[in-house]
Length: 485
Image (tube, rainbow, N blue to C red):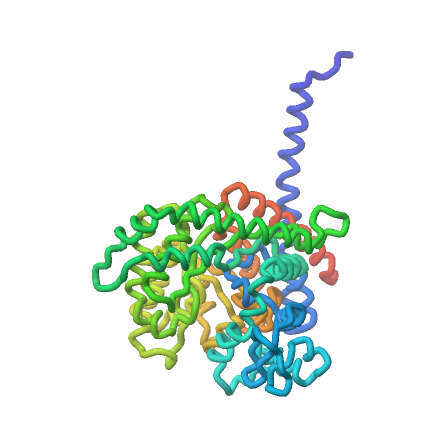
Protein backbone atom coordinates (compact mmCIF):
# COMPACT_ATOMS: atom_id res chain seq x y z
CA UNK A 1 0.00 0.00 0.00
CA UNK A 2 1.35 3.36 -0.99
CA UNK A 3 1.96 6.00 1.65
CA UNK A 4 -0.19 9.15 1.38
CA UNK A 5 1.67 12.06 -0.16
CA UNK A 6 2.90 14.92 1.97
CA UNK A 7 0.50 17.20 0.14
CA UNK A 8 -2.43 14.94 1.05
CA UNK A 9 -1.44 14.88 4.72
CA UNK A 10 -1.14 18.65 4.83
CA UNK A 11 -4.51 18.99 3.12
CA UNK A 12 -6.19 16.67 5.64
CA UNK A 13 -4.66 18.54 8.58
CA UNK A 14 -5.78 21.86 7.11
CA UNK A 15 -9.33 20.56 6.72
CA UNK A 16 -9.35 19.26 10.29
CA UNK A 17 -7.94 22.55 11.58
CA UNK A 18 -10.47 24.58 9.62
CA UNK A 19 -13.30 22.45 10.91
CA UNK A 20 -12.09 22.88 14.48
CA UNK A 21 -12.05 26.66 14.29
CA UNK A 22 -15.85 27.10 14.51
CA UNK A 23 -15.91 24.67 17.44
CA UNK A 24 -13.25 26.69 19.31
CA UNK A 25 -15.12 29.90 18.55
CA UNK A 26 -18.36 28.38 19.78
CA UNK A 27 -16.72 27.24 23.02
CA UNK A 28 -15.24 30.73 23.48
CA UNK A 29 -18.67 32.32 22.94
CA UNK A 30 -20.20 29.96 25.50
CA UNK A 31 -17.45 30.76 28.04
CA UNK A 32 -17.88 34.50 27.46
CA UNK A 33 -21.64 34.26 27.92
CA UNK A 34 -21.20 32.22 31.09
CA UNK A 35 -18.69 34.75 32.42
CA UNK A 36 -21.09 37.60 31.70
CA UNK A 37 -23.82 35.65 33.51
CA UNK A 38 -21.58 35.11 36.53
CA UNK A 39 -20.64 38.80 36.57
CA UNK A 40 -24.30 39.82 36.51
CA UNK A 41 -24.99 37.45 39.40
CA UNK A 42 -22.27 38.88 41.65
CA UNK A 43 -22.56 42.55 40.66
CA UNK A 44 -24.20 43.40 44.00
CA UNK A 45 -21.89 41.20 46.06
CA UNK A 46 -18.88 43.47 46.81
CA UNK A 47 -16.42 40.78 47.88
CA UNK A 48 -17.19 38.43 45.01
CA UNK A 49 -17.10 41.36 42.58
CA UNK A 50 -13.70 42.43 43.90
CA UNK A 51 -12.29 38.92 43.49
CA UNK A 52 -13.69 38.63 39.96
CA UNK A 53 -12.31 41.98 38.81
CA UNK A 54 -8.93 41.49 40.45
CA UNK A 55 -8.47 38.27 38.46
CA UNK A 56 -9.77 39.77 35.21
CA UNK A 57 -7.09 40.65 32.61
CA UNK A 58 -7.08 44.44 32.28
CA UNK A 59 -4.85 45.09 29.29
CA UNK A 60 -3.08 48.43 29.61
CA UNK A 61 -3.05 51.51 31.80
CA UNK A 62 -2.70 54.42 29.36
CA UNK A 63 -2.71 57.29 31.87
CA UNK A 64 -0.42 56.94 34.85
CA UNK A 65 1.86 59.57 36.36
CA UNK A 66 5.07 57.90 37.51
CA UNK A 67 5.45 59.86 40.76
CA UNK A 68 1.73 59.82 41.56
CA UNK A 69 1.52 56.05 41.19
CA UNK A 70 3.67 55.39 44.25
CA UNK A 71 2.17 54.83 47.69
CA UNK A 72 3.25 57.22 50.46
CA UNK A 73 4.67 54.36 52.52
CA UNK A 74 7.34 53.79 49.86
CA UNK A 75 8.29 57.46 49.78
CA UNK A 76 8.69 57.52 53.55
CA UNK A 77 10.84 54.40 53.49
CA UNK A 78 13.09 55.79 50.76
CA UNK A 79 13.29 59.18 52.47
CA UNK A 80 14.40 57.45 55.66
CA UNK A 81 17.06 55.49 53.78
CA UNK A 82 18.27 58.71 52.14
CA UNK A 83 18.47 60.45 55.56
CA UNK A 84 15.92 63.13 54.68
CA UNK A 85 13.93 65.17 57.19
CA UNK A 86 10.24 65.86 57.72
CA UNK A 87 8.94 69.39 58.30
CA UNK A 88 6.13 68.51 60.69
CA UNK A 89 4.26 71.81 60.29
CA UNK A 90 3.63 71.11 56.60
CA UNK A 91 4.30 67.35 56.52
CA UNK A 92 6.87 67.91 53.78
CA UNK A 93 9.95 65.77 53.12
CA UNK A 94 13.00 68.03 53.10
CA UNK A 95 16.77 68.17 52.70
CA UNK A 96 19.15 69.66 55.24
CA UNK A 97 19.96 69.14 58.89
CA UNK A 98 17.27 67.34 60.85
CA UNK A 99 16.35 68.77 64.26
CA UNK A 100 13.47 67.20 66.17
CA UNK A 101 13.35 70.12 68.62
CA UNK A 102 12.72 72.49 65.70
CA UNK A 103 9.98 70.35 64.17
CA UNK A 104 12.33 68.72 61.63
CA UNK A 105 12.82 65.11 62.76
CA UNK A 106 14.55 62.63 60.48
CA UNK A 107 12.01 60.67 58.46
CA UNK A 108 13.47 57.53 60.01
CA UNK A 109 12.05 58.67 63.37
CA UNK A 110 8.51 58.27 62.01
CA UNK A 111 8.92 54.50 62.09
CA UNK A 112 9.07 54.70 65.90
CA UNK A 113 6.16 57.16 66.11
CA UNK A 114 2.99 55.59 64.74
CA UNK A 115 0.87 58.72 65.16
CA UNK A 116 3.29 60.93 63.24
CA UNK A 117 3.82 58.24 60.60
CA UNK A 118 0.09 58.00 59.95
CA UNK A 119 -0.23 61.77 59.76
CA UNK A 120 2.50 61.79 57.13
CA UNK A 121 0.81 59.08 55.06
CA UNK A 122 -2.45 61.03 55.17
CA UNK A 123 -0.68 64.24 54.12
CA UNK A 124 1.17 62.57 51.23
CA UNK A 125 -2.00 60.95 49.86
CA UNK A 126 -5.80 61.00 49.97
CA UNK A 127 -5.97 58.42 52.75
CA UNK A 128 -8.51 59.47 55.41
CA UNK A 129 -9.27 62.56 53.34
CA UNK A 130 -12.40 64.39 54.45
CA UNK A 131 -14.66 64.87 51.38
CA UNK A 132 -16.05 68.03 52.97
CA UNK A 133 -12.64 69.66 52.56
CA UNK A 134 -10.80 70.80 49.43
CA UNK A 135 -9.81 67.60 47.65
CA UNK A 136 -8.34 69.46 44.68
CA UNK A 137 -5.72 71.29 46.75
CA UNK A 138 -4.93 68.33 49.00
CA UNK A 139 -4.45 66.03 45.99
CA UNK A 140 -2.15 68.30 44.01
CA UNK A 141 -0.42 69.56 47.15
CA UNK A 142 0.77 66.04 47.96
CA UNK A 143 3.28 66.08 45.09
CA UNK A 144 5.33 68.95 46.52
CA UNK A 145 5.41 67.16 49.88
CA UNK A 146 7.08 63.99 48.58
CA UNK A 147 8.99 65.26 45.53
CA UNK A 148 12.42 65.13 47.19
CA UNK A 149 11.95 61.43 47.88
CA UNK A 150 11.56 60.76 44.15
CA UNK A 151 14.77 62.28 42.83
CA UNK A 152 17.03 59.22 43.08
CA UNK A 153 14.37 56.53 43.11
CA UNK A 154 13.05 56.29 39.55
CA UNK A 155 14.07 52.64 39.20
CA UNK A 156 12.46 51.73 42.51
CA UNK A 157 9.32 53.54 41.43
CA UNK A 158 9.25 51.63 38.15
CA UNK A 159 9.76 48.34 39.99
CA UNK A 160 6.86 49.04 42.35
CA UNK A 161 4.54 50.04 39.53
CA UNK A 162 5.30 47.08 37.24
CA UNK A 163 5.17 44.54 40.05
CA UNK A 164 1.76 45.82 41.16
CA UNK A 165 0.51 45.91 37.56
CA UNK A 166 1.45 42.27 37.01
CA UNK A 167 -0.26 41.25 40.26
CA UNK A 168 -3.44 42.90 39.00
CA UNK A 169 -3.19 41.37 35.52
CA UNK A 170 -2.15 44.53 33.68
CA UNK A 171 0.28 43.83 30.84
CA UNK A 172 1.08 47.27 29.41
CA UNK A 173 1.84 50.67 30.94
CA UNK A 174 2.32 54.13 29.48
CA UNK A 175 3.98 56.16 32.21
CA UNK A 176 4.26 59.94 32.24
CA UNK A 177 7.74 61.16 33.16
CA UNK A 178 10.44 63.63 32.08
CA UNK A 179 13.20 61.54 30.47
CA UNK A 180 15.55 64.46 29.73
CA UNK A 181 14.38 67.22 32.07
CA UNK A 182 17.76 68.77 32.92
CA UNK A 183 18.83 69.00 29.27
CA UNK A 184 15.50 70.52 28.24
CA UNK A 185 15.72 73.16 30.97
CA UNK A 186 19.22 74.16 29.87
CA UNK A 187 18.15 74.67 26.27
CA UNK A 188 14.92 76.49 27.20
CA UNK A 189 16.98 79.33 28.67
CA UNK A 190 18.33 80.04 25.19
CA UNK A 191 14.91 80.59 23.61
CA UNK A 192 13.69 84.16 23.23
CA UNK A 193 10.26 85.25 24.46
CA UNK A 194 7.29 83.41 22.95
CA UNK A 195 4.22 85.61 23.17
CA UNK A 196 1.63 87.52 21.21
CA UNK A 197 -0.99 86.38 18.72
CA UNK A 198 1.60 85.20 16.16
CA UNK A 199 4.69 83.90 17.96
CA UNK A 200 7.66 82.83 15.85
CA UNK A 201 7.48 79.13 16.66
CA UNK A 202 9.42 78.13 13.56
CA UNK A 203 12.21 80.47 14.59
CA UNK A 204 12.27 79.07 18.12
CA UNK A 205 12.41 75.49 16.84
CA UNK A 206 15.11 76.36 14.33
CA UNK A 207 17.18 78.05 17.02
CA UNK A 208 16.97 75.00 19.28
CA UNK A 209 17.73 72.46 16.56
CA UNK A 210 20.67 74.51 15.29
CA UNK A 211 22.11 74.42 18.82
CA UNK A 212 22.12 70.60 18.83
CA UNK A 213 18.90 70.17 20.81
CA UNK A 214 17.69 66.99 19.09
CA UNK A 215 20.89 65.03 19.66
CA UNK A 216 21.23 66.30 23.23
CA UNK A 217 17.76 65.24 24.35
CA UNK A 218 18.09 61.90 22.57
CA UNK A 219 21.34 61.09 24.37
CA UNK A 220 20.04 62.32 27.72
CA UNK A 221 16.80 60.33 27.50
CA UNK A 222 18.51 57.15 26.32
CA UNK A 223 21.14 57.36 29.05
CA UNK A 224 18.57 57.90 31.79
CA UNK A 225 16.18 55.20 30.64
CA UNK A 226 19.02 52.71 30.18
CA UNK A 227 20.18 53.22 33.78
CA UNK A 228 16.65 53.17 35.22
CA UNK A 229 15.56 50.07 33.34
CA UNK A 230 18.77 48.17 34.14
CA UNK A 231 18.29 48.88 37.84
CA UNK A 232 14.59 48.01 37.53
CA UNK A 233 15.50 44.59 36.13
CA UNK A 234 17.98 44.11 38.93
CA UNK A 235 15.44 45.00 41.62
CA UNK A 236 12.89 42.56 40.22
CA UNK A 237 15.50 39.83 39.59
CA UNK A 238 14.54 39.68 35.94
CA UNK A 239 16.16 36.83 34.02
CA UNK A 240 16.56 34.69 37.14
CA UNK A 241 14.43 31.92 38.66
CA UNK A 242 13.28 34.47 41.27
CA UNK A 243 12.04 36.96 38.67
CA UNK A 244 9.06 39.07 39.71
CA UNK A 245 6.06 38.94 37.36
CA UNK A 246 6.55 42.68 36.82
CA UNK A 247 9.46 41.82 34.53
CA UNK A 248 6.93 40.80 31.88
CA UNK A 249 4.99 44.08 31.91
CA UNK A 250 5.69 46.15 28.80
CA UNK A 251 6.45 49.80 29.58
CA UNK A 252 6.48 52.84 27.34
CA UNK A 253 6.87 56.49 28.37
CA UNK A 254 5.01 59.72 27.68
CA UNK A 255 7.09 62.90 27.90
CA UNK A 256 5.68 65.42 30.34
CA UNK A 257 5.08 69.09 29.54
CA UNK A 258 4.45 71.37 32.53
CA UNK A 259 1.60 73.53 31.26
CA UNK A 260 1.96 76.04 34.11
CA UNK A 261 5.51 76.98 33.09
CA UNK A 262 6.62 79.95 31.02
CA UNK A 263 5.83 79.62 27.28
CA UNK A 264 9.50 79.18 26.38
CA UNK A 265 9.77 76.25 28.79
CA UNK A 266 6.52 74.74 27.53
CA UNK A 267 7.58 74.95 23.87
CA UNK A 268 11.00 73.44 24.56
CA UNK A 269 9.45 70.58 26.52
CA UNK A 270 6.96 69.98 23.72
CA UNK A 271 9.71 69.94 21.12
CA UNK A 272 11.63 67.43 23.22
CA UNK A 273 8.59 65.16 23.38
CA UNK A 274 8.00 65.34 19.63
CA UNK A 275 11.67 64.70 18.85
CA UNK A 276 11.88 61.68 21.16
CA UNK A 277 8.55 60.17 20.09
CA UNK A 278 9.33 60.60 16.39
CA UNK A 279 11.79 57.71 16.61
CA UNK A 280 14.80 59.18 18.37
CA UNK A 281 13.94 57.19 21.52
CA UNK A 282 11.55 54.28 20.77
CA UNK A 283 10.58 53.89 24.43
CA UNK A 284 9.05 57.40 24.42
CA UNK A 285 5.82 57.18 22.44
CA UNK A 286 3.99 60.48 23.01
CA UNK A 287 3.75 63.66 25.06
CA UNK A 288 1.15 65.17 27.40
CA UNK A 289 0.46 68.43 29.23
CA UNK A 290 0.28 68.01 32.99
CA UNK A 291 -0.26 70.12 36.11
CA UNK A 292 -3.75 71.34 37.08
CA UNK A 293 -5.76 72.46 34.06
CA UNK A 294 -7.16 75.28 36.20
CA UNK A 295 -3.68 76.66 37.00
CA UNK A 296 -3.87 80.41 36.17
CA UNK A 297 -0.92 80.23 33.74
CA UNK A 298 -2.37 77.13 32.11
CA UNK A 299 -5.73 78.85 31.64
CA UNK A 300 -4.20 82.05 30.30
CA UNK A 301 -1.81 80.30 27.93
CA UNK A 302 -4.15 77.53 26.77
CA UNK A 303 -4.70 79.00 23.26
CA UNK A 304 -0.96 79.59 22.86
CA UNK A 305 -0.20 76.03 23.93
CA UNK A 306 -2.71 74.66 21.43
CA UNK A 307 -1.05 76.71 18.68
CA UNK A 308 2.30 75.23 19.70
CA UNK A 309 0.89 71.72 19.39
CA UNK A 310 -0.70 72.57 16.05
CA UNK A 311 2.62 73.83 14.68
CA UNK A 312 4.67 70.92 16.01
CA UNK A 313 2.11 68.38 14.78
CA UNK A 314 2.71 69.71 11.27
CA UNK A 315 6.43 69.10 11.71
CA UNK A 316 5.99 65.64 13.28
CA UNK A 317 2.67 64.34 11.91
CA UNK A 318 3.32 60.71 12.87
CA UNK A 319 3.73 61.42 16.59
CA UNK A 320 0.52 60.53 18.48
CA UNK A 321 -0.66 62.99 21.11
CA UNK A 322 -2.58 62.51 24.35
CA UNK A 323 -3.75 65.53 26.34
CA UNK A 324 -5.26 66.24 29.72
CA UNK A 325 -8.45 68.07 28.78
CA UNK A 326 -11.70 68.63 30.59
CA UNK A 327 -10.28 67.87 34.05
CA UNK A 328 -12.49 70.71 35.23
CA UNK A 329 -15.86 71.17 36.92
CA UNK A 330 -18.39 73.92 37.41
CA UNK A 331 -17.26 76.44 39.99
CA UNK A 332 -13.58 75.52 39.75
CA UNK A 333 -13.04 78.04 36.94
CA UNK A 334 -15.22 80.72 35.28
CA UNK A 335 -17.93 79.18 33.03
CA UNK A 336 -16.29 80.33 29.80
CA UNK A 337 -13.18 78.23 30.53
CA UNK A 338 -15.35 75.10 30.43
CA UNK A 339 -16.64 75.74 26.92
CA UNK A 340 -13.78 74.73 24.63
CA UNK A 341 -10.81 72.89 26.18
CA UNK A 342 -11.77 69.42 24.95
CA UNK A 343 -12.82 70.57 21.49
CA UNK A 344 -9.68 72.65 20.96
CA UNK A 345 -7.49 69.82 22.26
CA UNK A 346 -8.96 67.57 19.57
CA UNK A 347 -9.15 70.07 16.69
CA UNK A 348 -6.13 72.31 17.31
CA UNK A 349 -4.01 70.15 19.60
CA UNK A 350 -4.58 67.05 17.41
CA UNK A 351 -5.13 64.79 20.42
CA UNK A 352 -5.58 61.11 19.61
CA UNK A 353 -6.60 60.56 23.22
CA UNK A 354 -8.08 62.77 25.93
CA UNK A 355 -7.39 62.39 29.62
CA UNK A 356 -10.49 62.85 31.83
CA UNK A 357 -13.02 64.77 29.66
CA UNK A 358 -15.14 65.36 32.77
CA UNK A 359 -16.64 68.70 31.71
CA UNK A 360 -17.67 67.60 28.21
CA UNK A 361 -21.29 68.67 28.81
CA UNK A 362 -20.17 72.18 29.72
CA UNK A 363 -18.62 72.54 26.25
CA UNK A 364 -20.42 74.33 23.44
CA UNK A 365 -22.57 71.82 21.52
CA UNK A 366 -21.61 68.79 23.63
CA UNK A 367 -23.54 66.32 21.51
CA UNK A 368 -21.81 67.55 18.37
CA UNK A 369 -18.48 67.17 20.16
CA UNK A 370 -19.31 63.61 21.20
CA UNK A 371 -20.23 62.79 17.61
CA UNK A 372 -16.95 64.28 16.39
CA UNK A 373 -14.89 62.35 18.94
CA UNK A 374 -16.65 59.11 18.03
CA UNK A 375 -16.05 59.70 14.32
CA UNK A 376 -12.37 60.51 14.88
CA UNK A 377 -12.02 57.63 17.36
CA UNK A 378 -10.58 59.88 20.06
CA UNK A 379 -10.33 57.68 23.13
CA UNK A 380 -11.10 59.10 26.57
CA UNK A 381 -8.92 57.93 29.45
CA UNK A 382 -11.39 57.57 32.34
CA UNK A 383 -9.96 58.16 35.83
CA UNK A 384 -12.86 57.64 38.24
CA UNK A 385 -11.04 57.89 41.58
CA UNK A 386 -9.17 61.10 40.87
CA UNK A 387 -12.23 62.70 39.26
CA UNK A 388 -14.15 62.04 42.47
CA UNK A 389 -11.39 63.25 44.81
CA UNK A 390 -10.19 66.28 42.83
CA UNK A 391 -13.40 67.49 41.20
CA UNK A 392 -16.13 65.92 43.31
CA UNK A 393 -17.60 64.30 40.19
CA UNK A 394 -18.83 60.71 40.36
CA UNK A 395 -21.79 58.48 39.63
CA UNK A 396 -24.44 59.92 37.32
CA UNK A 397 -22.66 63.28 37.21
CA UNK A 398 -19.68 61.61 35.52
CA UNK A 399 -19.95 61.42 31.70
CA UNK A 400 -18.65 57.84 31.36
CA UNK A 401 -21.99 56.37 30.31
CA UNK A 402 -22.62 59.25 27.89
CA UNK A 403 -19.30 58.58 26.19
CA UNK A 404 -20.29 54.92 25.84
CA UNK A 405 -23.80 55.68 24.59
CA UNK A 406 -22.45 58.01 21.90
CA UNK A 407 -19.81 55.60 20.63
CA UNK A 408 -16.78 57.41 22.02
CA UNK A 409 -14.08 54.84 22.84
CA UNK A 410 -13.01 54.77 26.49
CA UNK A 411 -10.54 52.94 28.71
CA UNK A 412 -10.19 52.90 32.48
CA UNK A 413 -6.96 54.37 33.88
CA UNK A 414 -5.46 54.92 37.33
CA UNK A 415 -4.05 58.47 36.92
CA UNK A 416 -2.26 58.71 40.31
CA UNK A 417 -3.12 55.51 42.13
CA UNK A 418 -0.63 56.08 44.95
CA UNK A 419 -1.94 59.52 45.85
CA UNK A 420 -5.55 58.39 45.32
CA UNK A 421 -5.00 55.19 47.35
CA UNK A 422 -6.55 53.28 44.48
CA UNK A 423 -5.50 50.36 42.29
CA UNK A 424 -6.12 49.01 38.81
CA UNK A 425 -8.79 46.72 40.23
CA UNK A 426 -10.47 49.47 42.22
CA UNK A 427 -11.06 51.54 39.08
CA UNK A 428 -12.93 48.58 37.58
CA UNK A 429 -14.91 48.11 40.79
CA UNK A 430 -15.97 51.77 40.70
CA UNK A 431 -16.99 51.43 37.04
CA UNK A 432 -19.13 48.40 37.83
CA UNK A 433 -20.69 49.70 41.04
CA UNK A 434 -21.15 53.39 40.23
CA UNK A 435 -21.95 53.11 36.50
CA UNK A 436 -23.65 49.72 36.34
CA UNK A 437 -21.40 48.47 33.53
CA UNK A 438 -21.76 44.88 32.40
CA UNK A 439 -18.99 42.42 31.57
CA UNK A 440 -19.01 42.88 27.76
CA UNK A 441 -18.59 46.65 28.23
CA UNK A 442 -15.68 46.21 30.62
CA UNK A 443 -14.11 43.71 28.24
CA UNK A 444 -14.41 46.18 25.37
CA UNK A 445 -12.72 48.83 27.48
CA UNK A 446 -9.89 46.40 28.27
CA UNK A 447 -9.36 45.74 24.57
CA UNK A 448 -9.41 49.49 23.91
CA UNK A 449 -6.54 49.91 26.37
CA UNK A 450 -4.30 47.96 23.99
CA UNK A 451 -5.88 49.00 20.67
CA UNK A 452 -5.44 52.71 21.48
CA UNK A 453 -2.00 52.38 23.03
CA UNK A 454 0.92 54.08 21.30
CA UNK A 455 3.30 51.10 21.23
CA UNK A 456 4.81 50.15 17.88
CA UNK A 457 2.86 47.78 15.63
CA UNK A 458 4.85 44.63 16.46
CA UNK A 459 4.59 45.21 20.20
CA UNK A 460 0.88 45.94 19.96
CA UNK A 461 0.29 42.75 17.96
CA UNK A 462 2.02 40.74 20.68
CA UNK A 463 0.11 42.51 23.46
CA UNK A 464 -3.22 41.92 21.72
CA UNK A 465 -2.48 38.22 21.23
CA UNK A 466 -1.41 37.84 24.86
CA UNK A 467 -4.51 39.67 26.06
CA UNK A 468 -6.88 37.49 24.04
CA UNK A 469 -5.21 34.36 25.38
CA UNK A 470 -5.49 35.70 28.94
CA UNK A 471 -9.16 36.62 28.48
CA UNK A 472 -9.93 33.16 27.07
CA UNK A 473 -8.28 31.44 30.04
CA UNK A 474 -10.03 33.77 32.48
CA UNK A 475 -13.45 33.13 30.95
CA UNK A 476 -12.91 29.37 31.05
CA UNK A 477 -12.19 29.58 34.77
CA UNK A 478 -15.18 31.83 35.41
CA UNK A 479 -17.57 29.71 33.36
CA UNK A 480 -16.60 26.70 35.45
CA UNK A 481 -17.82 28.58 38.52
CA UNK A 482 -21.31 29.22 37.15
CA UNK A 483 -23.80 26.96 39.00
CA UNK A 484 -25.47 24.35 36.83
CA UNK A 485 -29.14 25.20 36.31
